[in-house]
Every structure is written in structure tokens, then in C-alpha cells.
Amino acid sequence: MVGFQGKLFSYIGDLKKNYFTNAMGNIQIKSKKYSRQDILEMQNAGKIILLVNDKIYDVTEYIDEHPGSREAILRNIDKNNKESYNFHSQDAKKLWEKYFIGYLKTI
Picture (cartoon, rainbow, N blue to C red):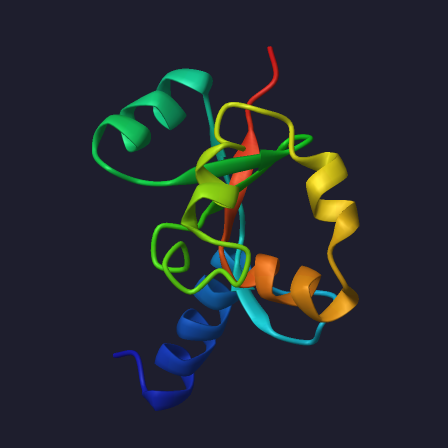
């Protein structure tokens, strides 16, 4: 018989396997790795995906709120957005992290 304590430790173990605390102190899901084909499939399904080096951001929910316009985001699809990312303030970079979904798979 597994008591409350056993269930709690099992739950905590699952959390440690699937989540981590990021640099801002927020709990975040451990990152998934996506292939270029995965990204293409997400885009074909209507997702707005941006890349910064090997980091992947799904900004679908944010695109209409972007102060620089929807078009500013759309013209950066299918590019490495390192320069665009570095242009942003520290506060804006924290906002980017909200939309981080994983890393690009490398071969």
C-alpha cells in the first residue's frame, strides 16, 4: 500500500523529471527538441514560430500584441532572429521566454 508520503515523493520525482527552474526563478517544462520538419508542421497548422540560434519560440498568442506590429514578427519567420532578439530590452527578452517551447534538434 502506497501512502500519501509515497504518492507525494512519486509526484515530486515526476516534477523533477519534467520541470526545472529557469534563470528568472520560474518553473518551466524541460525543453523538447524539434526537428525542422516539426517546425514546418507547426507553421502549416497556423503557428507563428521564431528561431533564435537553436531556441524555438511559439509567438502565435503574442503576434497581435507586439508593439512593433504583426508584420515585424511575420517578416522574421524562417530566419535566425539572434540580431532581432539582441535588439530587445531585458524586459522584452523576459517576455520572449514566456513563448519558449524548446530547442532545434541538431544532427
